[in-house]
Amino acid sequence: MPKLKTNSGAKKRFSLTGTGKIKRHHAYHSHILTKKTKKQKRNLDGYVIVNRANRKQVRDLLCMR
Image (cartoon, rainbow, N blue to C red; front, side, top):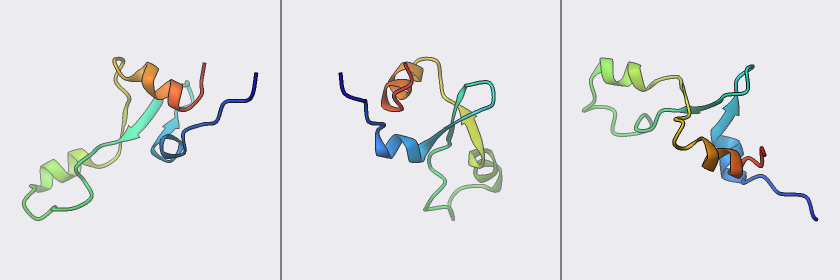
């Protein structure tokens, strides 16, 4: 069986923590920032752990079986 290729878009968007959890950036923090409050922009900054409901999909894209 041939080797599986990692999805190129997924490897740019997701990374692993030291304990093996998958982290991602928040959405809605790239443009149209003038109408968003400072608090909203601050909360969208940084990383968050991928939700349990989406974990299997992301692991398949990253070829982590």
